[in-house]
Length: 191
Image 1: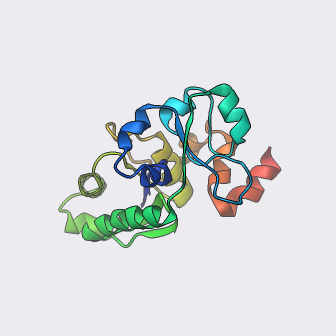
Image 2: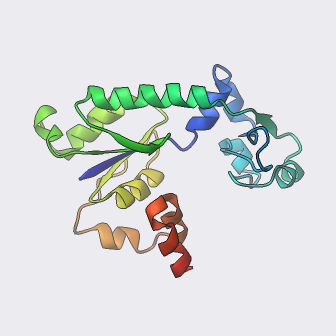
């Protein structure tokens, strides 16, 4: 089984630094200097106004004039994500991460280390990572990613077995395929 560790607002948290109380307000990552005027990650309060990553700044401000834009902090993202990967390594896993905020590791071999089955590995990962992280397990990277998007910090998502994966993925939107770079062209074909 593949375990996905997901933090959908990692870059926003890094940019806020010690001002995390701003997450309760409409706040989003400002565009990089010199880059096109598209927003980065947005807080849940901003999403309540329909603001999402990739939206034009002008449209976002029209929807929510009180939206606060914070400058991105790439170094802060690297530091924060490095600490997360270190925590995953500390439970004995070998995480692989192509993008900050998203990592994968194999559960095989860790069950004996944590004296139990897959649930004990998931519990160890949740304890090591603390609040705010979404952790889920499924047979492949994509299916574990989808499960992690459905997990919540206070509510664990049950592992998806090989027998359940087809039924689990069938009702999910095709748009989720765009989350994995290797599946983007497949999403375009299916749209």
